[in-house]
Length: 640
Image 1: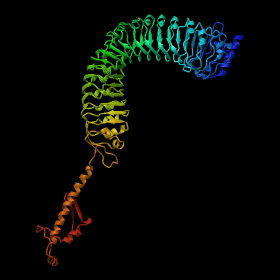
Image 2 (image 1 turned 60 degrees about the vertical axis):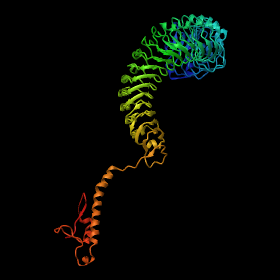
Image 3 (image 1 turned 180 degrees about the vertical axis):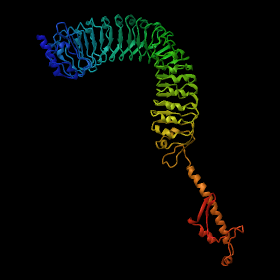
């Protein structure tokens, strides 16, 4: 009864110490409820609480100091992924039966206490907290420990691995990543033969890898990436017969031993960003288990093993940024699971193997910056899952693949600096997820397809340095996400669509073409004239107070409707008025005496036509005497 009374007090104290909605699951007011039925609580057959699991309860606060007095039989405490914002609960060290303690991702801080009293502890996870001061080497006294994980505790003082760790004979998992380890990796770790997983990444470890690590026959995973390790990988690593994966990337290692590539269970080998030289061992091509090989950014040379991937289900192959030569490995997708094939920035020659056009699993295919020749395999651009295809900076030729219409997932297409010719198919508009297209510096000709305006996701369109000879498609103005447009150095003709102003102020380049007409005013006002340089038939609109650069001012144009109206009315009126003046001039030359005798000054050419004195004619030319208007002027009436 006393134990159960203490257990009741535990729940009372917990609700006082912590805040969080999940605590409502503990209805301590209801005395009829058995504590063992509470959420997150586990009991033994006698009703004693052995398990408290409050993981991911979003609790804040601090554990009660007398935790272990209330729960003397506690074996498992899981409190990870909370927001305690407090120091490590010192009272936990009094839980003498505690076997599993996980307070990871809990925003704990401060200095850790002496952990020696936790003699029964088998699992200690304190991942991603903010502990400070000295690393608790007292845990080396916990000889029952099987797992210790201090991943991502970056505020510890710098410390070194002490030989006391070798006392942990039962330790299977030792994860000390990103916790300020310095110095060398000591050889005594080779005596910790129960180890299955050893992770020392993200520290400042230096020196060479100890060959004694080859004694770890049970080791399955070895992570040493992001350190400053140097020298050759010892041949003794080939003795780790249980090894499934090794990641020693981002160090200064210089040699990949053949023995490591012979391991029969090896699935992943990641050694990118080191100083590896020599060739990739040919024996790795015989592996039946390898799924990932990542050795990019090294100094590897020679040919890639011809059978690489032929017998194993490769998922990823990363050989970029080396000095590899010869033909591309042809069988990397033989297992049908290849997700990414990244071999850029090498010296590969020959053609792209046609097999990759049938690799339906591929998501990223990058062979750029090599010396590849030949045409693009039909179907390569239409791979159903491919999001990035980069063939740029090679010597590829032939026409642009029409199968682009099936590239439903493709977002980035880079083919610049090759010798691709022919038309750009209008079916490219069906690749609706395209965001970036770079086809610059090829031999493409014909029109830029107006259908390209259907690619609503497009933010980069680079077509410069080709032989496109159409007008600039007005549909480009529909690409509202477009940030960079370059159509320079082509043979484009015609005027610049006014609607392209809607894309300003984004970068656009139309220079070195054969465009003509007026540059739209908005481009001029936003100082974009350099985007149109070397188009001699372009001009700047008049009445703009701005620098014209190399361009002349466009001639003033008149409204054609206004011009027609002036011609239709003004010309006949001018003719009629001129005729009238001539008649009057002749009449005024008559003898003045005839005027005084009342004789008519002017007689029109037919006797039966009414004749008028010139004063009568002038007096009759008033608004109310208008009879009508015609093609030759206005007709007036006069008194008879």
